[in-house]
Image (cartoon, rainbow, N blue to C red; front, side, top):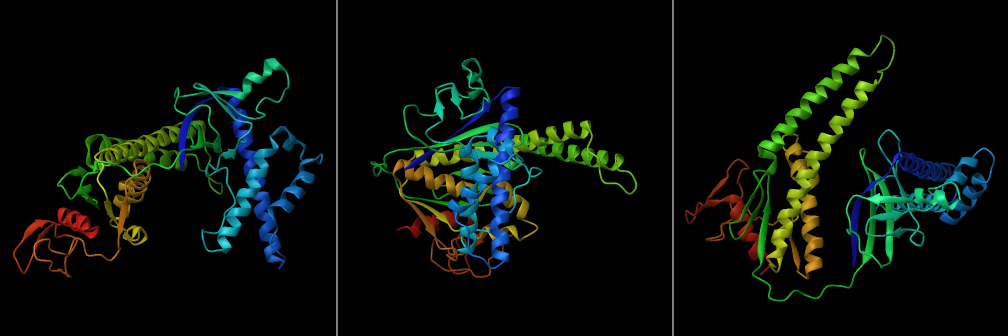
Length: 386
């Protein structure tokens, strides 16, 4: 099984410049390959293979007009073309959306590193061909400091190494092959988990994990975020002249960087909270773990709930439960999307079909049972696996 590791890089100014050049070249190669594929499809020609595109790109790379491509490792452009071909094939197989051209404005900064050339120590990582000179005293530019010491395992074969930029920092992500885990021993009872907006998760044993977006820290950050967004909007309006487009000043750039830091801060708090909950649940070794198959597209189409659903991150919660359970040798059961977990009385089994979302307490018309609807859903999910 593959485990991925992601660590932040701490580059100096010269290294940061080269990282942007590498990412820009990868974006150029991807867009070039996508344009070739679209033009061939429009003209009614056959699909262009990865081999043919790379062969044509090599001719382009050796031309005088595109001599700057030779300052970047050939592995970066080869993988970018391969990624484009894979994305284009998946689209026609109806496995993904239509591939789009990568945009510098949208922040599409990423590139691939060759698995045989990358070197990782406890504190540094060596990337390929960052230094343009072959001199020994210049080769130190290839070594990037890692923000965390000993985060990535050493002495193993690394797979899928990627360098990405999130708008503030550069990150290194690699995958490492591990042996398949054995089924967990001394497992506890099964557990059902109901995800919701009022509380992030309600477990069948009565444990409740509240919505972190209702805490004072998140509310203050969101208030600061709104004020900064309004301030940036006013600055854009002030710098707009008649008949001309908006102009971005240095103060606007600084304000946008502050806003981006708040976005990242909010995302990191929510992600850390989800990791804490899922790790605690997996640590109890319940077997199996039962989740419901939520209709995320339908929930996001509700304009009253879309923002709250997005902030909760139900899909990310399920993803973490699934891969952490696989690491621990536990089983995860996904209940059917139309299973009436909230509408079924746990006492008599009656299904209340007209249960409204505003009814937080379930009142059974047959046996008179009263229970919190989220707790009842979690208990029914637990029974689903039996």
